[in-house]
Image (cartoon, rainbow, N blue to C red; front, side, top):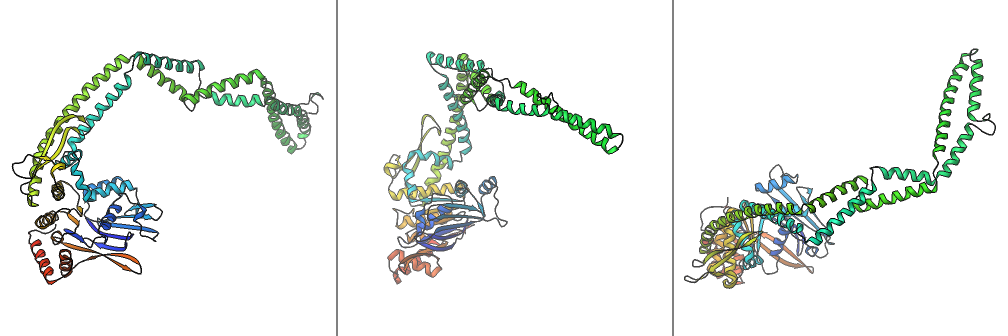
Length: 563
């Protein structure tokens, strides 16, 4: 449940700390005081859309935090998937900041979180119902979702959806494979041309890198040859018969040292070291000679390399980053060609899959329809019972299920119908329900949903539109009854509903130094009576105070307390 809410610089609220209790909490205040801003703050901290317009004028940022406890198992599991755990005392702290320039950040128990994660967790923590949601009842396409939720048909629907998606996938494959003969021939010729082009190139993995190296050597052959010529001359000068070359001089030095090496041992050791150097220099000279002989590139050889590189690079641009990927592309092209060549067998295979998946989809749709029919009967009874408790004893709600072509939601058109008076046929809600009836029907739906949902906190934002008097008292009583098992927050303008709250919060607006400030105060019993008197009569008099006390006395005559 929602334990506390901290708000800073949100619209007209500069700063507010609100502690919530179990049971039914009502929020009242004059029009424009900021009651709905509290609901907007709850929406915002739970990841719903929030804009910089919500930031208080002149403030650098808006900040909202909410503390929850008694977390539903679904919330704990969702958090665990994101690597987040509740605190040791089982609480969860959610924070959201939005700056004046529109940048937003989110944190869950101090850890940064994506808005999508926040939204997913938030919808498992709190269910917020505003006036606009009544209009959903006027849209028959939305009724099937209510029926499936109320009937607990998520698993049956998931089975159908999986079967339907498999069927659609096969049908898409059949559509892609079905083409006229001219198109088929054109595609096959194009595939054959691409395969022949790759085959003719006779590609070898690593060939491009090798050719690039050879091209560099060919382009710089003259400069390389000059360098090798210099090396060879230094080692073995041809003009002097090799007498002045490095090899000749090293050999002479070795001989000189060897001639005296028997006299002094150090000279012998030096001769051995110099002999080893002579071998190394000889090896360098031999390699330089071999490299010089290999530099036999001419313009034709370079042109051949350039042409081959151009071919390889063109194929890589068309089919992959390197030779290996080009060869892999060749295999894929061959598979496509083989598929076209055996298109009839492929189409026959797809047709068999289509028949099988269609049969499975029809069977799953039949099970879903049967489950919906059973859920509809229970749903009608539960909602009608709640409507009777809301002073609508003669209103009858019926669920119409009509067969339609299979879609992603099944083979049923679901629509809620109501008969407002005994003996009248049930008609579409959109055509017969008044604003007050819509509010109470939606509340009845929410009441039934509360029995099957695992959401601990329900929020009703001014859902009392179009109702008054005895009906309002019934609505308040029902909310108080729901609050025995759930935490319920309700923004209301009606004293009959406000009197039913276990906790009463007053939202007050005041102007100081040319700025508007809103405060949220928890009222004691005496203050509650005065606020009820204000709501009923505008002015607090002994008469309105007596009426307010009577409202409180009637509203609190109940059995059971919030769990």
